[in-house]
Image 1: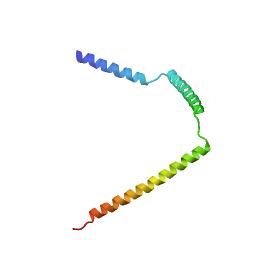
Image 2 (image 1 turned 90 degrees about the vertical axis):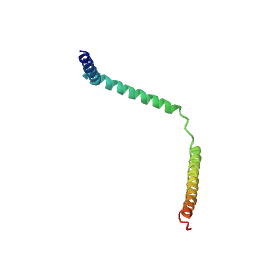
Image 3 (image 1 turned 45 degrees about the vertical axis):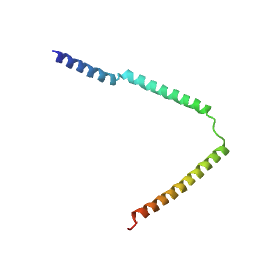
Image 4 (image 1 turned 30 degrees about the horizontal axis):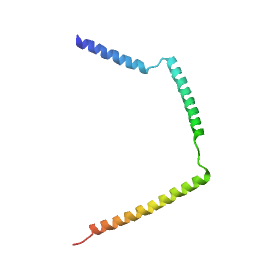
Length: 98
């Protein structure tokens, strides 16, 4: 008897979860309308935030870009040098004959 009651509860629970995911035809329209409204309001907010941004001027962008390129090249050279040193040390250790 208790087992039957538990099984009935499980069946009802499964039915209720299925009903939650199957919208009625009108609910589908409401969801689409609210989604479109949400998208429009999101883009309006995005546009407002972009208006608040203080964009850097052209000379500042050029200077910062040059700094990034120089640092990247220097790091590349440094990593290449460290790699060469490690390679030579490993070659010396591995091919050392006794």
